[in-house]
Each structure stands twice: as structure tokens, then as C-alpha cells.
Image 1 (tube, rainbow, N blue to C red):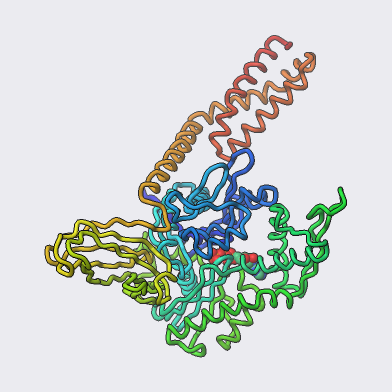
Image 2: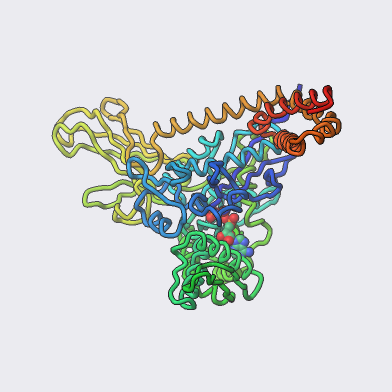
Length: 619
Ligand SMILES: Nc1ncnc2c1ncn2[C@@H]1O[C@H](COP(=O)(O)OP(=O)(O)OP(=O)(O)O)[C@@H](O)[C@H]1O
Ligand SMILES: [Mg+2]
């Protein structure tokens, strides 16, 4: 028996939208979700009835449920509580954030519990996994997941944890711009320096690649993981709020979460419209209560493209500065660039395109789809990893680490161990020694960043080497190896070169989940998946019986209804029976075992009732 090869998928887990793709019949394609769309909003909500919602259904109810609708979680993943970005997000987001139990990571209060951010992202990933399974009609677990090139170790680890929680076997974490370049190069012969300019909903990346004979060599990357469409939306919102306050005696819309959510959606819509029209009209009726009781206030505003460009000028300027620096890092002049790829929905903005044109002195390529290309590249990479025999053999990816990796040294300075733009995987050894007599442990703080003062860089974690030989200070040396994997994830190991013994290391103060907590979450999700599978198994054994019972109800219905008409409670019973049948049919069609099995007792009762009615001729 020949089996189709196991499907593997590529997932672009975006700030605003996510997409899943796979190589099908030799070509990468985006897999539609079960509603038929290619993009799934990265939105998770807990509805008032306690149900978890993901994607379009979650986004649709955001206005009426802003405090329990989580969007842009990617802006929080793997970040430290108290960081500048988290503080900023707390100001802007309608849902509440709290610190994790040890005060390092960020949690989201949702539906009465504090969720680690990777668990929120896991719901989006699980949704895409289920979409792929519906498409292939079989289980899918092997996946490549993309992250912004500028993501640091903590953000990458947290994304990988999200994948595991979603039940995915994450084969590789790859950089979004590299992924886009891979998809661009698929089936084309490219021999050029290519720049990927990726401005999405929440992050900005720019990568310079040298593509030659199937080798995708990333020369330099730059970026900002807190710069994207969300920031532009906020500028428009602030402008609308200010304008409204001026027109209505200082009414501050920011105090009303529902109004804010409506404003956010309207601001984004207007921003997008302005990419193709010179002006956009924002109309939000009944947005606030007026001073006079019962008098509602409406928002009516006209936003011109020039005004939008003025409001967001510094954001576009920041993109240009990052791109210039990345070119300098790459040692590539703008005129030597053979192609510029625009990736990310926000690059549809004409002002962004103009900035790119001015910087590179050329028209950017129109050959990639800005919101789909990253998932396509991830699918190609997944295929290369799972079925190397079936892939274009000569394709090789050489990616780099985005930021300097280093440690804190005396005086609070940052000492670089592995410089940015080093090709990964890579490793570097460093010798540490004790500074006090009889010292038996050493604490090493590992950071990523670009500042010479350690405190201004991101702390990845503290590694405590314990059980060091007791000796006078300086007499013991410990050799520490810093590794960066192909996923861009940092590993630290240590040994005593004199005895050759490996040193044990405890990692603390990371911005992610502790191993114990991750295990607990994985266990919970395994239980959930198990009970889902059990229900699925139960349904497949009960399906035939349920379908037969429905058919019998329908067959008996005319006679039973006639009998019921004569009884005082007839109408009610008929309506109830119809509703039960409709619900059961819908649940079977949607393959929703819990719902279908829940209807079974009612169906049985209805069958019994109808049989006795028809046999006895009355109620
Ligand atoms: N026509 C348009 N004009 C301007 N902006 C647009 C347009 N269409 C989409 N956008 C913006 O693009 C952003 C979403 O882009 P995209 O789906 O590429 O982001 P993402 O992949 O979810 O985010 P990221 O890559 O940053 O994690 C949103 O901010 C959206 O408002
Ligand atoms: Mg993106």
C-alpha cells in the first residue's frame, strides 16, 4: 500500500493575520481556513458564555467584548514585564495585562484566569493546524513557524513553546523575511542581492540577502519588533479622539472601551482606504453620551491621505533609518540591490512605497503577495526538512543572528560574545574565573542588544553555575559555550577545562515559561486533546445510530405531528422535535462531537415519543 507522504506545514504567525501553507503537488500554496479565507485574524476571545473563539469569529465580536478579546498578542510574546514595550501596550490595549508569578513575563487576564502569552498564541496555531487537518483530511503536526528576523531569543523560545502547546512538532523557527525570499526564489533562477522590506501589523524587518545558485545567504538583518500597522492605527485613533474632544467639550473617548474598539477598527479601515483613495470618511454614530441626558454624540470626520502621512511621518522615517543601517551593516550600496521585495500589509501604503523607491532608487518588485508570501516560504522550508529527497536539492539557507549576544561585565558594561549578523548555527567559547576565594558558584547574565551599557539590552536569562571546585580566587577557570541554533535560540553550557567535568546550570529570570509550568500546560492541553479525540471516536461509533434516529423522526413526523395537533401541547412538542433534529444535523455536519453527542438523549426521547404517538394515534 502506498501512502501519501505525511503533510507538513508552514505557519506565518502574524501580529494581525496568520496564514498556513503547504507544498501541494510540488508547489507551495496557502491553505484556506474552514471558512474559506486565506488569512486568519490572530485574535482570541472568551465569549460571555465562556466559549473560546479564534480568528474571524473572535474578531467579529471584539466591539461588544473588548476586555476579553485579545489581538496583537505577538507584541507581548517573550517580553519582560516592565519593559518599555509592555508598558506602552498596557496603555493601548483594552484587555488587562498582569505580571507572571515570578514577575518576569506577561500574562493576559482573560475569562477569569491569567494566560501566559504563548498559550494565547497557541490557540491561533491550533486553529491553523486544524484548518490544515481539515484540508488534508488527516492529522498534521510537523510545522515550520516564522518569526520576525529581529526577534530575540526570549521571543523565539516563547513562539516555540506556543507551537508545542498547540500540539505542533516545530521543526524549525525561521525568519519572516528569509521565508519571503525563499518563496520569491521558488522556481526562479535568482542571482542577485535581494532586500526584503517587511512592514506588517506589529513588526518591521529588513533583510539583505545574497541569492546565488540556490544559496540564500542572509548578509544582514535589521528591524524593530515594535513598529507596524498597529502604530499607524493608533496615530489615526489619537487624532480622532483629539478631534472629538475638541468638538464636544473635552469628552474623552479613551475612557470607554467599547468606543475605543470601534475607533480602532474605523481608524484601521480609514488607513487602508487611504492607500487607494485620497480621502476617507469616518462615521461612527452613537459613539458617546452627550451632556444632555439622552443626547447621543456621533463622530464624523474626514481624513485625507496627506494628514495620515503627516500623522505617521516619524514611523515611516524609522523604517528608512533601520533600512539604511542594515545596508551599511551588509556593506551593500542601495544601487547594488537587484530586487526589493515588499512584504507585509502595511507596505501597501503609498508613502511607504515612495520611501522605499527613494531609498533604493528603483521600483520595488510586485511579484510577491505581501500577506501570503511568508507562509509560502515556511511551507517550502518545511518540505525541505521533511522530504529532502523531493525538494530542490541545491537550495540552502544561511541565516544570521540579528542582535549582539553578550554578557554583563564589571561596571555594568556589555561584552559581546557573538556579534550580530553571524551566520547560524554558531557557537563561541568564553573563559570565566572565580573572583573570590572558595567561590562555588558564578552567575552569568546573558543579554541581547546593541547598547554598550548592559542594562539597556534585553536580559535573556541568568545562568548560575553551581558546584564549582572550592579554591583560591582565580584558580578555577570555567569554560562556557554560548550556542545559537538554526532557530536563533541561545543555549549555554559550561565545563571545568581542568577536570573536564560539565558544570550544572540553572536558568532563571527568563521572560518565558519555566520548564515546570510549560510541562503543566502541555499536560492540560494533552488532556483536552485526548478528550476531544475520545469524543471524536465516540461520535464515529454513534454517528450511524444518530443518523438512523434522525431519519426515523423525519419519517414518523407527519403522522406524529397530526396526532400531536389534537393534543393541547402539540405545537410546542413539534417545534422542539424540529429544533433537536436541526441541531443534531448541524453538529454532525460540522463534525462537532460534543454537540452531536449532547443531542443524542433528546433524539432518543423524540423517537420514543413519535413511535408511541403513531402507534397509539394520540398524545
Ligand atoms: N491597503 C492597505 N493599506 C495600508 N495598510 C494596510 C493595507 N492592508 C493591510 N494593511 C495593514 O497591514 C497590517 C497587517 O499586515 P500583515 O497581515 O502583513 O501583518 P502581520 O503579518 O499580521 O504582522 P507582523 O508581520 O508584523 O507580525 C495591518 O496593520 C493592516 O492595517
Ligand atoms: Mg507578517
